[in-house]
Length: 216
Image (tube, rainbow, N blue to C red; front, side):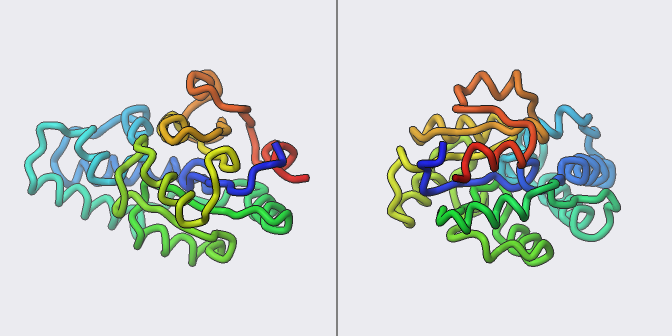
């Protein structure tokens, strides 16, 4: 799988181990907003969607005021109040460095809003690795292929030379909808059995395994 010219990563659950903080922050925000508290599986199921779409999926009967309150509380908890660690996965920096040194183009396609993504890229000092970014508040949410199509157009890379790396079914569905290859990684939202339903070229269990597949 060394032939890919463009490697597109999801962020949460793929490169950064933020699932625990996302779940905890959403649960805390729901309590403060006076809404039913979603369990871990319910919350994990919406990770990858933009924040408004996540709220819509969790609370289809919400009012507009409840939606705005929940989003505000969630952002406050995720950024400032929730103590759950959200480190980069082991070997993430090494993998990104190796791909860059192998002359790959790297991009992100994430459900995060632009301001949130810019903040975590600054905190992790990883923005320099990526040639282009696509965010959930600027494009149609996963599993729409819009983010991937936009990346390929900007970077002038064909679908056959592009691969999507993700930990959730939304990531792999997005790749399927864009007509590009995908690779699932099982250390995030969904397990290997779930990811296998979306015809990935491979399923890996660590970023070290991904290195072996993608780097010459």
